[in-house]
Length: 495
Image (cartoon, rainbow, N blue to C red; front, side, top):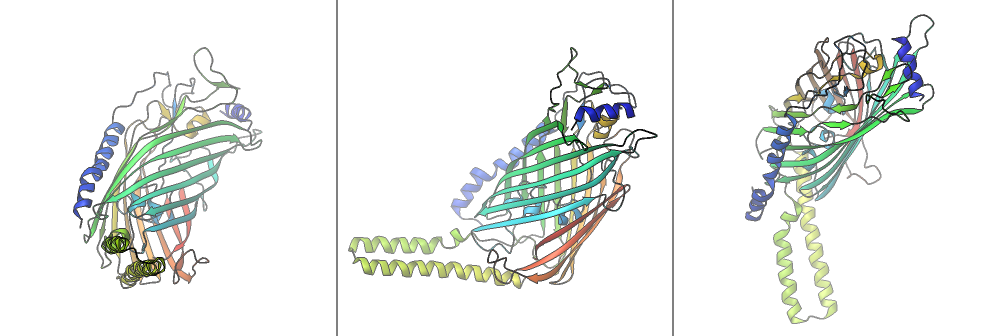
């Protein structure tokens, strides 16, 4: 095996108005239909490769196999990870973008204006305290060290419509301490996962739906030379919905993602007469890499006193009557042909009246949020289904050139989380857990326990980018399982 690894190193070289009701009938209903359609497509039987991939434990002697690029551990923002990944039914804020495609359109109580934005920055450190078996392969010989995941996201909200972008970059090295005089094998890997989303809320915000795509890019290179020889990229569609009835203490969310398949690039290598890509020393590269399809359904139930689904009034709807009144007044004055100076004065007064009207809405919203109960006890849960991948092995199996089949059947990941605020206005605590399925035939599932906190630390408007009185918080999250530890940090606005 070490001979093949050395050869691979050389290969790599390196409530609604009538208008709004009609809009709901015409537009909102497409979202559940598209979600269902994608889910049906995703669960359809997949074509299996006809290549002669050998039995379990045998050497890989063909390129007719696929890498199952399934991610078992929750690798996301601090809040999502602390709740065990059970966030599909909450879907609020930019942190939820990679969890539920409808998330960008969800207006939170502290969103006061027609245009708003939400930003997140974070970093996760899987395996910071101990050896990290990220693939849940047991004792596979390789170590994921170092391993870090920076992430960033931005939502732009325009009334009921929103755009969202969220990206994370999983960077790690895979190393194997060889026996005897063999040199240490070490490979650097980088995986980009980008979500680009368009979402809209209907029915006065009680139903949100979104469409998007996830863009992936994976590079593997020899860590000594840094020369890139194995790389791939791909795009897949995704959609989601969230039902959040005003005044109710529950939410329901569903998301579906089509599989993402990509054909690796292997530098100057050309297929042989059998169609195999074979590197020096007889190393067989895969014909494709695939992220499996996913369907996730989740819920959130508020057991405390803080409203889960308060109504958000669109400012353009709030001032519609006043604008109509001003428009009529201007039409009447136009017929009278008032002097230009008098007309200009009246128009300035009308604009000031409009501004004052919207300022009143802003102040009342801000006051309502400040007076909102902080007694939160939020229970969340979800179930994630991940599709099968035909004739597939894991990443470590490819590196070792030994068959360890992965993704032979649909995987089920149950998740559960709990969020509370034991010290109102100062401390938020979260805990959760999830059962990570094993995609490998000869490995078993493992249970993860998660916990985290946010502490309010200081007020800062960030040079006017945020309103006066904005407070910031810091937090940390821990995800612990057998042969796996992930530590995440968070800096964000306190809500």
